[in-house]
Length: 270
Ligand SMILES: O=C(CO)[C@H](O)[C@H](O)COP(=O)(O)O
View 1 (tube, helix red, strand yellow):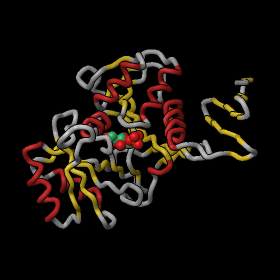
View 2 (cartoon, rainbow, N blue to C red):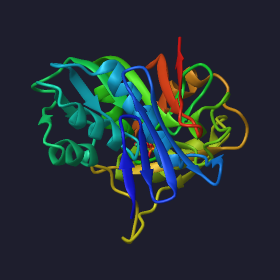
View 3 (cartoon, rainbow, N blue to C red):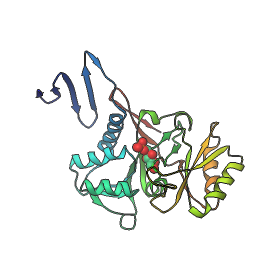
View 4 (cartoon, rainbow, N blue to C red):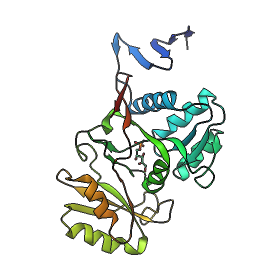
């Protein structure tokens, strides 16, 4: 292996990797055979998470830490920056683990009920900043923590940006339900005018349904036509007895970072 490095350039065998990194820009490009190869989806997530942390997390920040694969990079970046007195409130067992493993200060909403920001991923973000969340089954705690924050900042790869919900995310709206209510809730969703096809989310490598961090089940409610009046739909679903929370996040964020395949980050804000 042959390696050579200066401030902005790293040569590794036949590959030239350009590293340029400051508050405003973060670019990693992989140059092989005279052409730029497109970044992996994971790198797109990393670019978005790093940029959001650089822009919003400071010494003493109280930060809600979302869940999913993108948020791992935000935790990595908070650790890497070596910021002082950052307090982190998790949104799931997974994010608790990330915070603890990174050696960051772990808190909860009882001790830290008011947060400066929450950084979290999303399964889809539409043109009006309506979100579908809960692909990882954590939407209940994610919504509570986001609601306790002055700002919710979404970090995602470019595939999560869409015009209408359902354009890219085909798995439906994740709905957390009390276990004893899952059959009547599914029947209600099916028979109502919502146009939803509900399915109980089943576990992988374990028999039976997925059980959330709160001991509940998840129903994924698929829809075949574009959702109309999303704010009303979110209320109507939530009103069904047995529904604990939906993965529809309405009016909760105004800022989203989308990592792009060329290594740049697209900031969308209203
Ligand atoms: O809502 C979530 C978990 O409940 C996640 O934020 C969402 O599924 C996005 O995950 P990823 O960062 O892995 O794409």
